[in-house]
Image 1 (cartoon, rainbow, N blue to C red):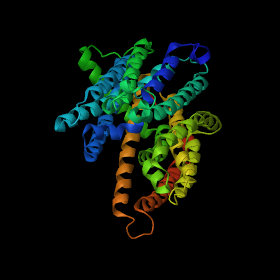
Image 2: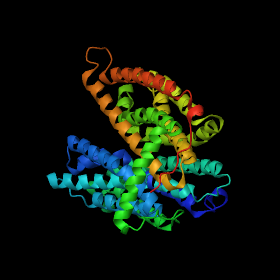
Image 3: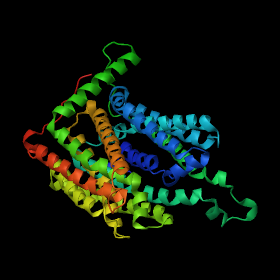
Image 4: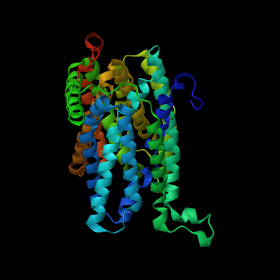
Length: 442
């Protein structure tokens, strides 16, 4: 990849891998919550900011994909990187203990973050996929996507380890002379500073992308209004095509089924670790182990998808996920890490499978839009599952010997198994009814 040979001979696939790694592997992830609370926000305000972030992604997700297909993928990627620069710049200058002014500034940060992720979603894959030669494109994309996932896992391994260490001034000052000791307030900005540098690198990478598809014509309308109206038409028609095409709908639902459960668990995994009795100091190390395991997931997903249909590959993954979900509630000390790690690594398996199939069935004119429809569906599913999980956590478990978390995990397993049965019933004739999505005219 580094020498630009083989499938990476074209610049876009190579830049895509670099962009995915630098954009996703952020050193502040293991300390994000404590960073906001150390600034002076309450835990409730931090939860509210997460809601703002999620809503921003949902609102911008599909329109951003349609805009990528109408005004150009490169422009959306440059916009995404620019928003990332602004997002991280705000965190670097955010004042401490500034009350509602601090909360408002952090809310703007979350909106910028959500808009940035939405703008990148779909556009990065589309611009890399269409730079590959048409002959053997499917196999070439498998290599590109697997490479991006592996190096992103390596990036997460470094980021998860470095973020916590940079945030802890006592560790830093242990290696520095007394006159050069780093104050706590400065140390807490270091992970943000690292990601700010990454954002500048992402912007440089995006500026180097080569547009692979000219913007859609606006049929004589003024440039801005024409593009916006074309984006709206592409969005509505692509969403309609996705809903009516079993080839797309079954894969989206199968991916959604596993993704929402695994993503929700990834957000509460530290509470599960505590339930097992795992010490807090090991959490960052455990996150690094998950990232290390993710290095091998793309190779497994590639082999499975070359031997099975997308629906069968997702059904197999969902079946294993069902088994793992029933192994979580006992929370065996240390042994419980095995099903926990497996569940979180299923995110990569599902991501590879769904992305691979959508690229195969999508036409050039709506590739980024279809990928953004996928992002919207997955984010909505994650939100609904999180609300259900929170409700079960709040109102269940008090009358049982299990802790509320264990009781909720048991319910989760049975609910998932029921939904899996529905998915299998809906997708048993996938091959018979599956068809390629036709391109919506803009």
